[in-house]
Length: 400
Ligand code: CTP
Image (cartoon, rainbow, N blue to C red):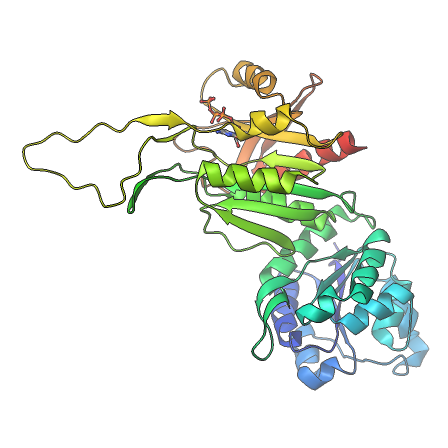
């Protein structure tokens, strides 16, 4: 089989050096990569580096090898174009269809999926001109990854960093695997809860669970690659931040509830993949609880936590909002799942069979997705990303 053909466009920002790592990931995972830098990008990383890492000659202009008509061919033959970093200038050119070098020509002739990974100072990202250009590109079907928040060039900190190259690679991999030029969740806001809540007993101890957050993170990654604006509410997960996702970190079920209610106000879909503690200790000891010689420990009294899934399913804040829950069951999996779907009032319930060696912390899972309309969609044992894609297929169908 031919290797998938990727054009890596690099525009002139300091983050160009991070694109070398993205290039390596793409070539090492079996992609044929043509690097098309802009002339400004070469101020940051030279042509020799791009050429050596990609194994192909590198040009910025349409005037080299004219007999091969590179300004048309490069884009026509690509399975994916990814521009990383994409500067404010590059987004403006792409939005307006300018074609004054090889990369901008390539963007006009490509009929494959296109991913932009912007990187710039916060002021430039927030400027109405850039906002409009990003909206135009997204409306046309491009996946524009939200920049990460953190240290920028110089002393500034804010939104505008190029996301981790490994995470940009994950977006490219998902977009290539789907192969569609217009992502079906574009313009949608989806909220995902992930991980497991921790309910503190004292400053050093908590009641927790074994959820790793992998399923929720897979849902966030796949939704971003399908063009959605993603809010990921993560409870105690140690996983790397997915690219292009607004991350909200929480600890307890009560904090998770607040974050979910806030984000759900304008969400098209909410997926509750987090393992939320049903109970929390009734009292929190401000100092560490000490053992006392000759005395039995005090019993721990628990109180119920709010049921977030039932609450958001009951008080729908937006009409047409799709709400998805997860259920971990050990026995009578389908019967318990059906009863839970009804009790919670959600639209879809992903039912996992759990046990000592199943689901928690693993990269794979097996599930059945039950619909409130009576549908049953089995998902065979496989990567959590496959289950995530099925969930989004079912959500997209319901969003219409
Ligand atoms: N959930 C929630 N708020 C809670 C508990 C759970 O929103 N306080 C959500 C979870 O995120 C998940 C679903 O509800 O989407 C799981 O429901 P739950 O009743 O907790 O199922 P199990 O953990 O399987 O528990 P049980 O069988 O004890 O009811």
